[in-house]
Length: 614
Image 1 (cartoon, rainbow, N blue to C red):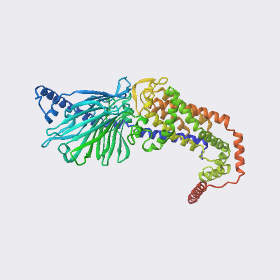
Image 2: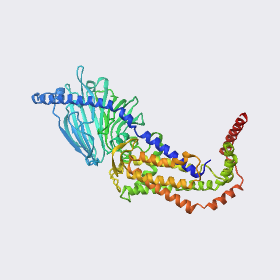
Image 3: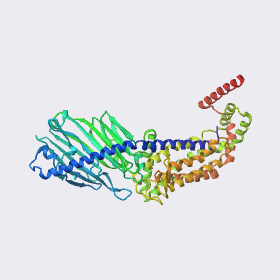
Image 4: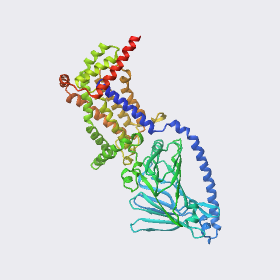
């Protein structure tokens, strides 16, 4: 067994390995993205060609309107019209509706700005679309998005909500009505699809709803925003998510409650109050940073309407931030899970964020205006709470150091006989009452806290646009210098000063631990503490400055705790005396110790037999 300080080094090594795996999983390999580039460009070319054709059709239609019969009714009136707009606002949203398709064509969030100071806009001039086919005659169908609806008016209901209604009437009195309810103080919009004459409009009562989303850049780092984008869905009551930084397709054969196209800090969500029966979602993500498209998604959902000639399909849209509190109280099951507080393999850290990190963060924020100071105080709180683990680690190390002379004697006695040395070392630890893993376990127990904070700082919309010291926005990396070239492996084309401070303080911790560690015989353990800061430099440079600032503060506190504990709390003479006293007490061998000795004894017998055979 190694000394406590070696166990601490092992802890840091494991932390580095886990960090590397986590960042590798949560980030997209740029080479894979480039491999998708050609496929995306081909898709965009087809879309552009379709737009050109559509614009020609629109021009022809507009020209036709001039000479059209103004007495046209039914489907003839619905297919030949002129587009008009209506703006409806609440205190959070500004929504521009169009009579073409009877739906929103632009949605802006009033309380959020982009990095260029323009308004955050989740629908851009008709970029998103909801449509469904309806029967307009014998073997004839039309898409609802291509029909010109009649604005029935904008009114207020009994609750003070604004209600805007669009309607299309067919040749035989069948009708479709799109009713939107915009509520004050809410990012949630009710969308009621009312069908009169279902038998005529739909084949076999089947509604095939198509929902297209063209999510565009909202943050400064478009590549990082793509890496954070996800398709989030609740199917048959179960929450699931899919990363959207590459092209893919997912089919859902069970009832779908809602589907969300989630960007780093905002999402667009379609909710079916009574569930869709099944669905499929295809998406394409570009491979070049020059494009401002994050992901283009095309969804299709199926729903069998109940028997009868009239039906109401109750749906909702959410256009808003990935704010945990808002989503938790929006009234839609599991929508708070859109916020990544711990997913997949790291879902075990979500409760740490929900019940410890976030409540403490919100409490401190009530008294402190600067988010940078809030992060520092949160870090101080966490380190003080976990300080008993640090103390336990260094106390175990002090005990191991006190036993170092006897361990060295055993090494000289047994030489290359590692099995014999291991058995005698275990016996020495048991007699002295020392746990050889005492220094490693506390370090490992702090790893979940690190990953919890990684998820929290990476997804907190509250940090968006908040400045601190030289960082203009704590939700993204700070830039102290721009490079004329791009360094691969995620480093980027800039240098983050908070990353530099995190690396320097990590290196100081490594130096401190190496100075406290007796001679290291294993070269890997000897040099890994120097490699770990380099790993941080490469992977932290594009991470949010809130995280690198936290890591800097945490390292400074660690250095202070190490110095105080080892110089003012741990008494070497008392530890030596305690170990001597422990040897005089009777020892009860634990099952684990007995099993370890049994294994070591078996290994030694095999080793002895091999030597005799030779």
